[in-house]
Amino acid sequence: MSAEQTIREKLTAAFTPDAIQVVNESHHHAGHASSPGTGESHFSVRVVSPAFAGKSRLERHRMVNAVLADELSGKIHALAVTALTPDEAAKAG
Image 1 (cartoon, rainbow, N blue to C red):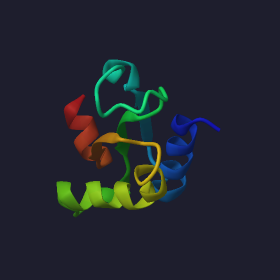
Image 2 (image 1 turned 30 degrees about the vertical axis):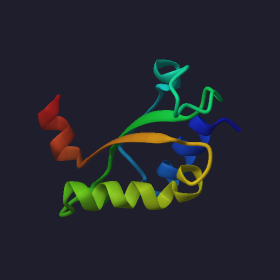
Image 3 (image 1 turned 45 degrees about the horizontal axis):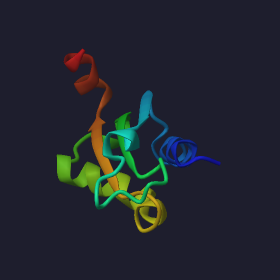
């Protein structure tokens, strides 16, 4: 299973999101000193879930990072997180 699929499945199981977007951005970092060259090292995620209600931005990032702890300690080098409630997502457009 690809890292992108693993991320999507784990976040879906943990947060039952209204919307989820997982983008592999590894190609933007190819050749950088910190890039492992696997093609699956840099990702951005956008998760819209009621689970984030009442949580600060930092708490939301920690929640996502906790779900993906195994991946972040291994093959994922960087993860950009946008974690929103459904109301916040509707306002953002």
